[in-house]
Image (cartoon, rainbow over the protein chains, first blue to last red):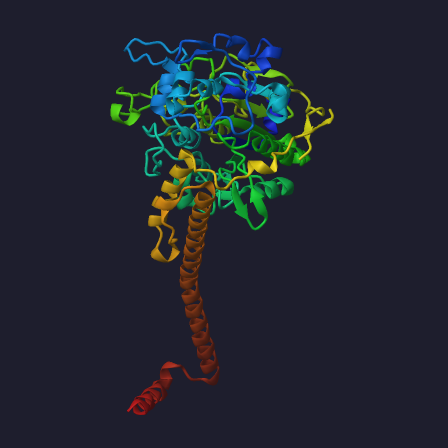
Amino acid sequence: MANGIPPGLSGLEHIVVLMMENRSFDHMLGSLGLENSNIDGINNAAAGNPDTTGAAVPPQPLAEFQGQLDPDPDHHFPAVDLQIFGGNTAPDRAANMQGFVKSYFNQQQDVAHSHKIMYYFPKASLPVLTTLATEFALFQRWFASIPGPTICNRAFAHYGTSFGRVDMNPIYINEPFQSIYSRLINASPKHTAKLYYYDVPSSTMEVANLLQNQPELFGTFQQFLSDCAKGQLPDYSFIEPNFTDHDTDAGEEVANDQHPDHNVQAGELFIAQIYMAIRSNAALWASTALLIVYDEHGGIYDHVVPPACPKDQFTATANDTGTGMEFHFDRLGVRVPAVLVSPWIPPGTIVGNRTFDHASIPATVTKFYLGDYSPRSPRETSADVFLEPKSAPVDPSRNLLSLAAMRADCPEFDV
Amino acid sequence: MAVIHVPRPPASAWNPNRKASSLLRTQVEHMHLAEKRLPQRYRTDIYVNAIRTEGEAAEYIGQVTAAILRAHQDAAKKRARAAARPGQLLQIAAEAEDTKGSKARKAAARGKSSIARGKGSAARAKGKARKNK
């Protein structure tokens, strides 16, 4: 231990975040609770949801890789409100997670089809994500930042806020808070940051930054692989998956974002490729922490009630939310899978009693590289961090990179 | 620990004719807003309201992304040229100054000053004026 800092933390140089699409915790990792009761998964979700006939629909291990969640389950603000509150709109209502089947029924008026929203993957179906979750640190209380769709949730990962948006409108940069990338590259001393999109036809969901900071901030997945191999990874990397099935000169590219109805196995392979790219460079492996997280639940069932949180400084109007009620950004979205990977993390780590959301990403990266920084949104300043800063004293109860020696038993995948 | 096998998606997973999701339609809209901020010469001639499938969305998104990249590269080249210009002027001025100093030194060595050559200069100017007639 150097100066009271554990070696995993003192040697940490790179933070990599991979944000996948639209799958809930119970859907992807809930099966782990059936083997380990310390994990709050399907083991605690037996009650399930009622369907529109009043029949109870329990979660079942029948999820398929593709072709099942079609149409794409609704996950815009009003639909998620129904999923969380079960259709109760009273002022003193309590969240009960009883509206998922009802919400999916609304899309096709098909009772049997609406049950599929309760399906989850058995552990063996997802060898990559479940292995990483059990071999490293599993966050079982990581929630989407907003009970709403992709763009506003991803904004929290980039800016620590969505600037009052609960929808898919673009986030404009002339807002009061800088993105985590701008903070890093404009810092003194300067830090390095990159947003790696898969390829040009897939491009990025962070279009506002694309316009302003290209090409300094952006790279492709091929460049990420090359940067890993050459040991040239920036301080902070954010990776976006392939959002479309498309053709290139090199051949057919299968979407690997896992957004319904894209193939889930393609996403598993993508996660494994990123893990192995870091793992294969010994120096990089020792000095990198990789966070794998999903932007939101995609309308798919999870049983944990999203907690209240401190308000942001913005308010979404009743018109914006589409529910007839204002939203003060004082409640998190539905729980999503989140796993932190590093050879300095003890196997089987479960982060069970701390709450995180995507504002934790810029909060962690800022605190780690820049220390005290302002201005930041109220939501970001109140968000928990998943990596401790490299300054003594380090609280051992919070530090996840806690091993005295690097592990030699970490898994490998055949990519 | 043994190497863990990662199953590959089947060939049937690839379907660029799949209807574009609301996420992709949003990405297309955002790209269209971005495209409208580009100079005319970088814009595509794709009618975004006709985009229906993932393949079509990817085609448009790819073209706009490439155009944005090109626009930034061209702007960077232009900035580099502009930045090089003041340096070039200074260099030319410095060379001119150096030439002047060198001539002055040579003149001094011959026991004449450049100012003393005013007559010759006037004669050269006169000759030039004549040439221009």
